[in-house]
Image (cartoon, rainbow, N blue to C red):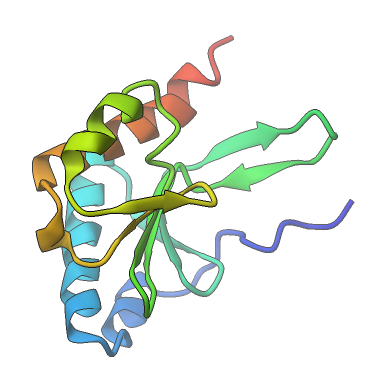
Length: 140
């Protein structure tokens, strides 16, 4: 079976975020770093070349494919901020309609800029997503 493309690396989160050229993505990336660290209690780690992740969980699909992934994370991409791990918790269905301007797709939450969303609700989505994959999905 092929190895997962997105794995934890030893790359510097600070260097990655410092290299983000778009001024809003740069400042939003720094705020997300602060917010996700605060909410999860985890230290940020680079996953692949472009994802800042927090915590980790092990997954195993029915196909037999398994691996580790960041519990929650983000990437300040050119088109928008991509936020990972926030749309699968049971709470997400009720929180997303109240969040503000966003899109979802391909397992991600997409936000143009943080000022478009309610930061308190975003923190709840982070908390719920993190809890969902680190505890609720993995109870013995």
